[in-house]
Length: 451
Ligand SMILES: [Zn+2]
Image (cartoon, rainbow, N blue to C red; front, top):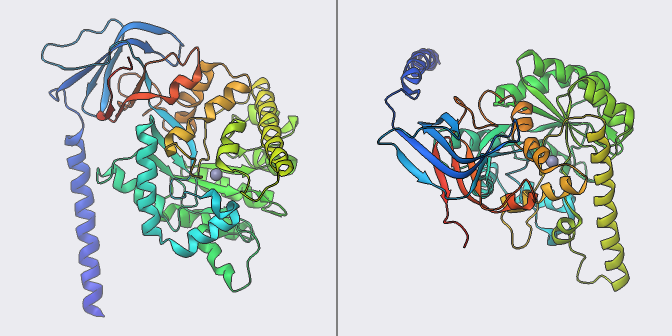
């Protein structure tokens, strides 16, 4: 025992030395003026802040960061040139609501069944590997950063984030939440008393302010970059006092809170508690939208066009023609209702951060390609293409607490950039076909221009 303690002390001491050493080494790992410079040349360069498109743009990249970007940038002699022809270059996209460690199969029949199969048949290790595949698909589609909001087993998202940061796995930059906090049962359907132990695989159930406080502190210890809370899963709901404590504990250490909330009371409590973003809010009253604008709370809409819902959640083979029609009507009504509330939010001055909430296998699409279909819904709600692009760049970066690191093509920011052949300012679906992706200075994908 004594010996073990001594060993532990030695290891702790060594760790402290290592930490000190690595911080010293990190200083030297920063890009130095002598690191080679690469020049990305493009016919069109979009400044997401001003909305201006410059002809013959150049982005100079040194190491992992942008050195300079614009139309009148001189390419230094000897720089490696990546010529993207007439492509439009813009910052890498940010998806503020993902579930990379989940990939539900529609044929299993809805969220309840899928969640059960996932937690009972997939270890967190297996799910982290699934997340690596989903993350790669996001990255290749142009999504260079995600905020992953739970349903990742016990800290599987943290494991994936760290492996990506170490260069062991190729994937998007991840802002991880660890397990979501919730009322009893998480988002599970009805479970027997024996099966309820499964809930802790996916959620941290809280009851009372001290449990809420403890859950946030545990999440931070587990490596969370932000906190996710499920405000309501009808009829279960957390309280305002619990939400306030969650926000207090997270904000104390500079972390943000994402609140899943739907309906008048849940969205109002989330806004009153001062969370940083409200997720989904498929129904939300005007007074809450007003409060969100006043408190700079982002809405992450997680919307899709009806065709997405129809492709992802096909009517069962046994459905009658009438049932199929009803199914289609339901999908269209849901999409239309979401369009209306997004238009109301934009009109009320609420800031929007793009979030896919994609967790179903969509036939014929990669995870990333399916996620980008969210932009069609934003356009259908009346958002202008430039505002949609800002929702997936500048706004996402601000919500994720990364506005000094990503979200624009400016000196000192990470060299996260993508290129498309089409004109997303005229037709937002042009963003669905990304042919060049660079993340942190590393070329992830480079395809020739379309003929
Ligand atoms: Zn979600």
